[in-house]
Length: 145
Image (cartoon, rainbow, N blue to C red; front, side, top):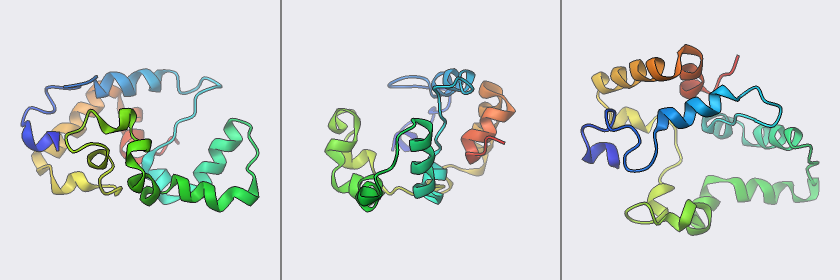
């Protein structure tokens, strides 16, 4: 995990790819456009069937009920993990250990086992400073209200 091998992970925003803050901020700025739908990993974990139906409604695509179970299977963490090379950008070439490294455990809150309380507080302060209260709240919770 990059955070474990780089104690300056928060200051080196984006290394070795792109800035997390810029990426989230630019999408946040256009969140109200009619062709943009925000989907949060936590909400997918909590209610994947509901989120898939919400996405289908957004793109005005009817769900073929005869394929519903197959859709749920192919969107599941277990399926993506078993088919990681097909599920991860560039087959996982960016990650040491490949695609299986990118698709690791599929659980929320793992950062609690990695970050100290001081690092967590530092991250939360930086998120608010970079993104503002509302966006930082969405990023942490998936709640757009």
